[in-house]
View 1 (cartoon, rainbow, N blue to C red):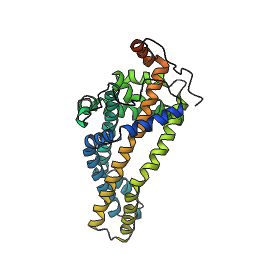
View 2: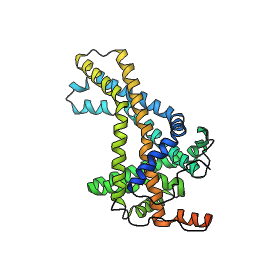
View 3: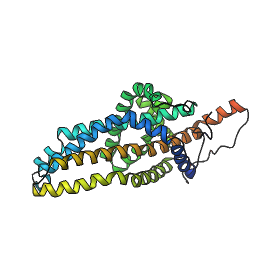
View 4: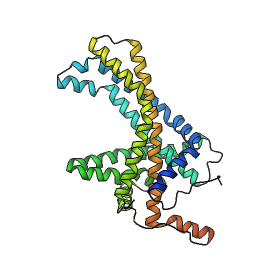
Length: 296
């Protein structure tokens, strides 16, 4: 048993979820960050290179001076951009799997002598389903946005547990969607509030990784307007983009961990699985919050 282990399977109020999210991240920073970098890093690197090449091409082609819509369209949807987006999607899927799998192992007391390779079986078995679930999530949210803005926003928050439901409960796509909608009932605003706060914190922390890309973008933009782009600027832009994407995806773990705490919180409120487990293990009932969380 790990010292000061955090119990996921219990109900928490808003402040407890925030505090435990960062307590868990501090406690597991070395193992979790190393695992994310080693497993998702190669795909993040490739995606960053393609996105860097894409931005370089945009500036070199005089995009900022173009007025033709067709010229802009061709520059936006070039092969570099599409490949960059593809590898970014792959990387984000792997980051989500790694964090969920790490917490699954953590809950089973299997991370005390943890090695980053320990998550690889889970990554291999879950990558394709999670990648496809991500596409399904995007389609459903897009349909919601096309119908009316609010249904899309509602689904974006309600289905934010989709990956966790798949990995912790092993449900199919439509079963997972139904499970997410059931869990979110009466708790949408609490989940939105948690994600909103975590997104702000994550955004502030990631700003430092965006600085090199911001500077290189300004330099390349000025050079593009003057038709003075150089190979050195291209290299710096690619490196800056890699730093930006790597930092952003590493910090994405903040929101994922917070969402997993909220997932277990809602499961506990709906099913009391943690309470039942504690009853079985110690034979008495601890105090557990079961009130609706909307008043966070």
